[in-house]
Image (cartoon, rainbow, N blue to C red; front, side, top):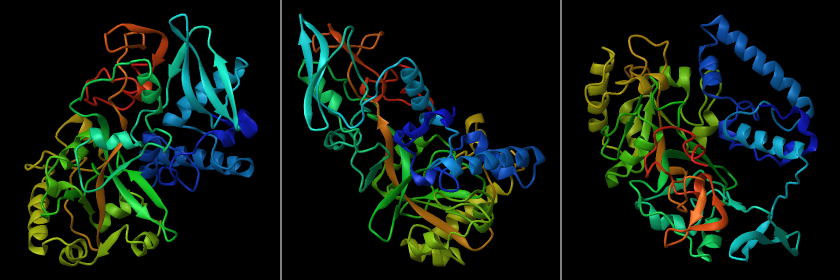
Length: 405
């Protein structure tokens, strides 16, 4: 998806978090990431990356960031492009006050826009698509308690749609196996006190030479499992959250770690900020992290013995096709395992986090919201994270919040 023809409207499309962009404004997908990792050992990858960089350079002459869009940004841009082509107007920064009913059906909304109240009428119905409640006060009620938790949802995902629907006696889903789509998150605190959150989805945990340890300095999870399962394991015991993601110099050079980029990027600023921990020995790293040095040394030694043979007998890292796809397919003898041998050693702290809510408004198969008696509410629909997930609190794959709508 491209935003080349958007003109000034491109500035209204919210950019992803800085840590998920390359070179200050270039979006990439998982295929692109693998090409960047392989560009020094594959002519095909070098050519792919060169094309991306040349396009990005051209974009930055005219635009605040790259116009090649990926993932959720591409989805929203495609929807907005279609809407604009059909002559629809898109209003931003609108506060929806109430749902309006007429003749027993939802027929519009009362809004506040630019300081004025206005009623918008709908011929067929109103669709609630406000992103769920992961960033709202309601979230703490429905998630397991951990010491600190960070959502990747924007502040506007505060449960407004659920509040509006409650006035019509709409039914909310029951508690699920998980009321959220979980992900481990690291947090950079900048000099001005602002925070940057980074979700550890596909770029580091599954890679060779990377392991996670809890506060007892022992491993507790298959690091190459999905981000939802990884963060679920963090919630299984208090000692698992927060935890630490570790790697050696070779893994850092090849893959990076969180916001720390692979070579040739200099990550000293992240060390100075306290986000990235760096030490010449495992014992010194343990001291920085407040871990028992002997236990950490034993944990790494135990993992290294298996990793040297391309296996992980303790937690089966790299044990299935999903694990290996998230690892480094070009690494031998195993896509996910390599000993941590080369100093300096690195670590970052991981907290429990989420990408959004799975608990929401109960709907019919046609996305029509039902009331507490199970009857459809005429004219009211819910999609995305405002809809109660049909996956019942599981997370079989990315994008699952999109399909049900």
